[in-house]
Amino acid sequence: MWLEQLIAESTGKEGTGILPVAGEVPGNYDIYGEDRVFAHIGIKNDPDLAITNSLRNLEVCREPVVDIRLEDPLDIGQEFFRWEMATAVAGAVLGINAFDQPNVQESKDITNELLEEAASTGSLAQAGPVLREGGLSFYGPAKTAKADDYVSDFFARRRTGDYIALQAYLTDLPETDSIIQGIRMKLRDTFGLATTLGYGPRYLHSTGQYHKGGPDNGMFIQFVAEDQMEAPIPGRKYGFGTFKQAQALGDFQALQKHGRRVLKVNLGSNIVKGLEQFRGILERAIAE
Image 1 (spheres, helix red, strand yellow):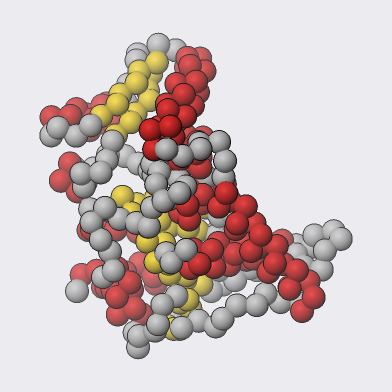
Image 2: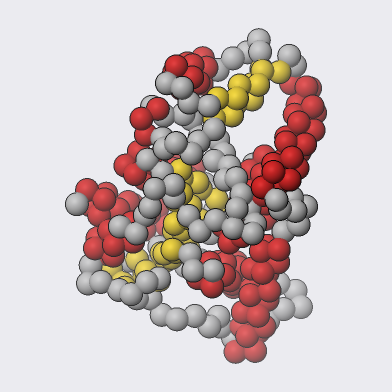
């Protein structure tokens, strides 16, 4: 996650940048486009054989692979320097300032405006869903009659060289993460596009900069849910649940402002059930 933040936040601006896909186990070479570089950091005397074999297979298929093997775990210190230096050099090559984060502040400003309104009115102001089906509510482009068609139409807008970012304003629990990772792998393997998963609001300070400041080649699916409780914030007229929802809505509106292709799904009060329902909709939509 440190590398993810370093690379995305430093290079994703002025319509250019490098998108890090963090922590992904390599798949077969034929599911990848021609826009990838595979980087691995491991311990020389304690190799992960599955990862090693995957990297060798990618190399045989002439994919670009960077395989760094440390003599000792304490050598990680030199990797901090290596990747910081490499990122600064990449910024110079791209012709951007690697040391600012203009679009992180943009989402903060929109969120603060939403919170000020929530403090005065008692609720967040947002347009209603364009489609409801089962326990799910969809926000985004113009509606269709069925969720299957709606999701199918969304992915019909994909282009070569795109990436798909899943943004989960949910608690990072094993069961939840397993379902979302399954959705991510299904999208990667079906479309051959890079896919990422970020938990909000954490990702706003890493890939969030790239999403809005980088090139217009992202497709975004934002997952939110109904909070079961509202923990108060001392000195504020709203609680942490409202604060989190405002951050999600602020980023959603920032993506729309930049003309990004973005779909928001409210999973309702039962997150696992909502994710399972969305996975079923997705599988039917992309099978058509």
